[in-house]
Length: 174
Image (cartoon, rainbow, N blue to C red):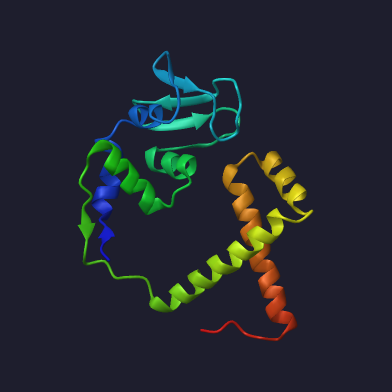
């Protein structure tokens, strides 16, 4: 599978307007030279979330979440990097440039990625249905990040899996 070219990724923010992108997801109100809305990441009601068309940048003055068009789509739509780029390109009618010269990821690492995803999914399901869920949710509300719950759950899943391997004295297969 070809990879998205780095030049396309670098030039993408120059080909779109971040205000148009975000206004498809949020109701923005012009305030001075910026646009404002309630922050979608911490769920506030005040218009702490600012979007700058000139700088092609967003920032929440309450929770500190900030970034460009790609990071906004990643966080708001819960997508990975490539999916975010494809979503933005589709929304703005851009043709994605692929680089067929890029070497693929080592196939041996795919086994670890697959294993990590399976372990993560299992422990996420376990934690969401256990009394420990309240602690994780409380932690996330303090951190005020929608991705923090996923991070906590995955970290706990990997930790538990590693402890299980240590107890059974098994090694991770390569």
